[in-house]
Length: 420
Ligand SMILES: [Zn+2]
Image (cartoon, rainbow, N blue to C red; front, top):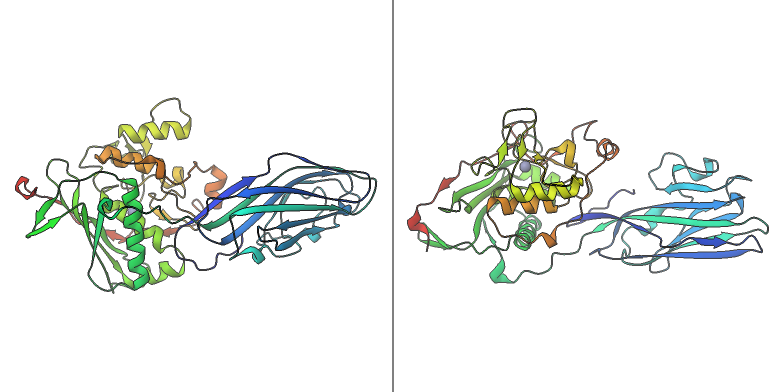
């Protein structure tokens, strides 16, 4: 994958595959084409990789080119491999250590293409991508069995939520730049898609509060790293024990650094999830079993059901939650070593941090009405995926919580008389 240019908004990564094999004739010279339709992205390409499986009895006859939806082309490989056979699951990535020119047939593994895939960065992601294979000589032939395109690009903007259905209102208290404020509003819109409940209005200090009101601010605390700030629910509605107000106050040094790393929006969505009760109200609502042991689990019925489906376990399955870290991390997140880059694990990953159907189901267990249809695509990472994410090698960026990390306010319950 290429290095991501700085972008604003969530990034998603998706793999698209060709539909049918294409024959490469042994008679005469020929150019064959295969196309892949890409859609679902909301912005330009951030990074791209391509994998091909070409069976051919003389790879040095072949020139392979990738073309984007507007006709720009990148040369992947040109007449390499001598008399060798096949490009057997050959992945082309700009970051691969070995150039394809130094490879040998069947070129299994990752290689740097002859051109630069960076050419496609910033260009159109959605549309028809074409793989062109020119067979420059007679006699030998073969088949393009399949090819796959892995694209990282901006996710689509959340479908607009009608103003009366916005669950979260933000009260800005200063110390946040306009782009940081925009990240809070983006996060409020994202969670408002997920949670469809209409919570009863409450009166707080003479002010009528609809939905969840969050006081958001930035302050200088200790610069990048160290303390991120505090985030959590502050006042809970009586009865449902769902939040009426919350706080999100962050160290401006951390916010600036997160913005540079493309992590701001995911961290704001994550911390807003804590304000809504994810990890912060689990214990209050008796949704944790095995607290204090090596294997604490979340036992809400909706989340267990979704986890059972994700696992293909054939039935509801208790969901592993963080069993390491400080007070704010442990038992307040999904377990990183199981869920990898999921948004509500305790660590921010580079690339996408999907808000999964599991997280949405867990909100139903807290007592919200939810819309699971707006979940991000998520699959459980393999051990290899986890290792590649650096989860077992070196610590990923903290979303919050370990060491001093993020403080949690202790929420208070409003009296019955506050309900309008
Ligand atoms: Zn967290």
